[in-house]
Amino acid sequence: MFLLSVTVHEYGHLTAIKLLGGQGEIKSSYLNGCYVRDLPPEIPYAYEIVKFMGGYSVALFYGILAKICSDPETKLVRNALGIQNIVYGTGEGLLAIGSQSFYTWTAFSALIMVVYILYQLRDRPVIMRVDGYRTYSIGESV
Image (cartoon, rainbow, N blue to C red; front, side, top):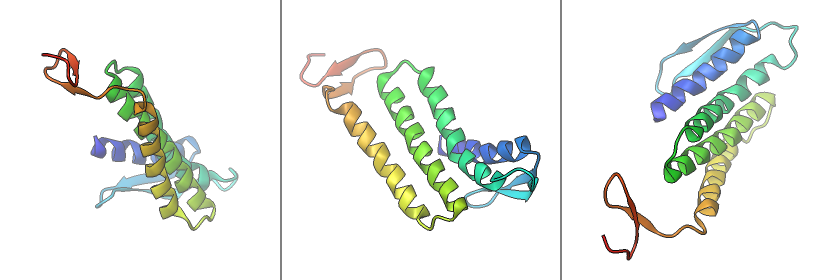
C-alpha cells in the first residue's frame, strides 16, 4: 500500500502540472520524485498548487478506499491515512511558499493521525478476530 501511495502522490503532482498546462515527469529514485520542467508563468502560484496536490491526491485516494470499505477497522485506518496526507500536503505546499518547517509538518501530520485513531477508538471495546467471518469481544466465548 505504501508504494501505491507514493505513486498516487507523484501522479497527483504530475496531474496538477498537466492541468495547469505545464510539462513534467516522474523519475524513479529511492523516494521517487516528480520533476517540473515547465509551468506557465501567467498562472499565479502554479508551482505552489503543484506542491499541495501530492498529499491532497493521496488523501482523496484513501477517502475513496474508506468509502467503499465495510470493515470498520480498515475504514478507520484509511480515514486516518487520508487525514495525515491532508496535513502532509499542506506542509509540502507551505514549503513551496517559503516555510522552513517541512519536517515539523511531517511529524505533525503523523501526530494528527495518531490522535485521530485514538479519538475514534476511545469508546470501542477491545476486540480480536478469530476467523474471517466474525469478530469476538475479548472475554466472549468462541
